Amino acid sequence: MADEQLLQDVANRLRVLSIESTNASNSGHPTTCASIAEVMSVLFFDEMRQTLSDPRCPSSDRLVLSKGHAAPILYAAWAVAGLFPESKLMDLRKIDCDLEGHPTPRLSFVDVATGSLGQGLGCAAGMAFTAKHFDKMDYRVYCIMGDGEMAEGSVWEAMNFCQHYELDNLVAILDVNRLGQSEPTCLQHQTDVYKARCEAFGFHTIVVDGHCVKSLREAFAKARATKGKPTALVLKTFKGKGIEGIEDMENWHGKPIGDKAEAAIRVIESRMKNTRPTKVAMKPPGNVLSSTGPDIIQLDKPPAYAVGEKIATRLAYGTAIAKLGANNKRVIALDADTKNSTYSDKFKKAHSDRFVECFIAEQNLVGVAIGCGTRQRTVPFISTFAAFFTRAFDQLRMGAISQANVKCAGSHAGISIGEDGPSQMALEDLAMFRAIPESLVFYPSDATSTERACELAANYKGIVFIRTSRPATAVLYDGSETFKAGQSKVVMKSKSDKALVIGAGVTLHEALAAAKTLSADGVNIRVLDVFSVKPIDKKGILENAAECGNKVIVVEDHYEQGGIGEAVSHVLAEAGGATFRHLCVRGVPRSGPPAVLLDVFGISAKTIVRTVREL
Image (cartoon, rainbow, N blue to C red):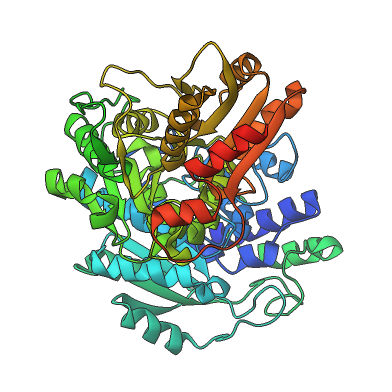
């Protein structure tokens, strides 16, 4: 155990390194770092159990720096521990250096990217839940939050989750340094109010002098001894602590201290017994937890639907994830109180110990799933109405930066849900998920392809979106059909097709109905099931378009922007020479019977027939 003088010296060394590295990059947040110097020192060199040779060791404690703009002090702590030379810190924010302005998992010691405030606690909650309920191990999770981000609703979603599941292996650390970016925070140093709020959310809460090493050690000891509830440490701190002339002063957010650095460092070092504490020992983990491999995850049984049988793809989703869970214990499912609509309740019934109810808190649903999936501990499938994923777009965006391994299933897509009306209709979801870097987007049109989409998703490391539909639709494929990302399927063709009609989900079945009507009049069309919206099947689209006179119609239950139509038109524009029509939902829809809505908004079989005849 490190003595208090050493821990204080390390804290001041971390301050110095934060000043020097931000000066070297001429950008960054040294004052934000200074307010958490003591707690970083105590965490790294007295409290947490870490493996220096393997920062992502699954047995190690986790730290989420939710106030990600304090990244320089996180990097400094690992340098002082000996993970890399302190001189490397002077490359902060350079294009060829992974010590970025805010932490990302490009670094071996970062599990989730932070910097978009209010998100760290949700991810930490997922890690803590995984420790208690999936790994059943004693590693602990710490999350450092700024007082400014306590205004974010997502923080309180996460706190509610933590207390509900009694995550006594989690410590939320509130850095109450009084100052925000542009002015003082709304509560400033009212630590009693923070304490009352945390206690109201079921946290064992301790107010601590955030610059007193002894008090911090005592508080962490109390947190370890607390059972049945999470702990919140409310640290009263000062922004820029220890930097003379800058401490607790406004207008120093996000600014290196420039020519004030030399004098400031001289004063800080005058308070140190040892001005160069290096390779300070970290506590090793206790129990050893084996790493999980990237094993192949398969359905325990192939799809077994009769062609022509009517099954909603949302129902097939529930069946599929239950089958995946039967074959691999790393598969888990999470939902936002829609499990009887998304059919994730089928997973809960089969594997209740691996189902997590996140309630109506979609931002936290995504954050918890991201945390659960870190260090390859689990493969999370999360579900809600597709429209409600839009509320969590920032979490999904940050998930991509975090290299998150999360599978999202959005049900109740489009106007085909009918009478529930536009608030429940996902019409922007494809655009949202297509925009996420390195994501996959599947839009299955029957039960068989839905099960295979889930299987493909489980084996892809990254964010995947599976769009499912409310209405029951006919099964098109038998269980032996194979599916791939980036591959479409032709479901109807002839040697004299007048046009290529591309659909997915409900609109694919409308296209097939249109094909039947046109065929009776001697007009043939080719119908293509897009299946993989991202990546789109460029080769298949261009080849089939060429065989249909380069006349292409896309019909989709989505707004005009960002969906299948834009993906296909991009492919056609690059090749040139095609006649293109886009049938989609234009304008805000309304309640009504599904068939009537499809007709009114121009994506029904009737509209497809008319459009083909007009080409």
